[in-house]
Figure 1 (cartoon, rainbow, N blue to C red):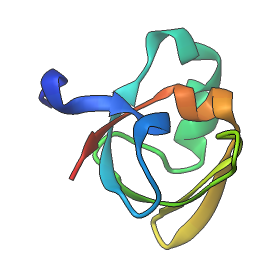
Figure 2: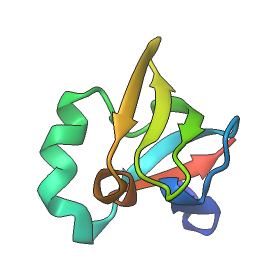
Figure 3: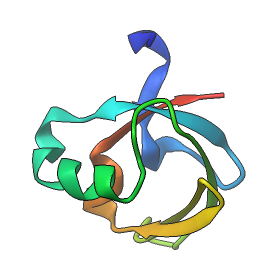
Amino acid sequence: MNRDLTMMLKHLAVGDRATIAGFNPTGKAYRRKLLSMGLTPGTPITVVRVAPMGDPVEIRVRGSALSLRKDEADALEVEKI
């Protein structure tokens, strides 16, 4: 993982692809929930939709669509592909 290329999920635009790089230390409360939804490091994702105020964010992961609340999305560090 290259820390220089990592960013938060909220910084991606619709249609952007990325891989999950890790979890933001401040989002520790959401880590277990995100892992149980299949959002493990190295997993590719695609941003499908972003609501006007950035909440929720819909992503496609492992062939499924997931909607993440803003706080959950803030807990994910990604590396843009």
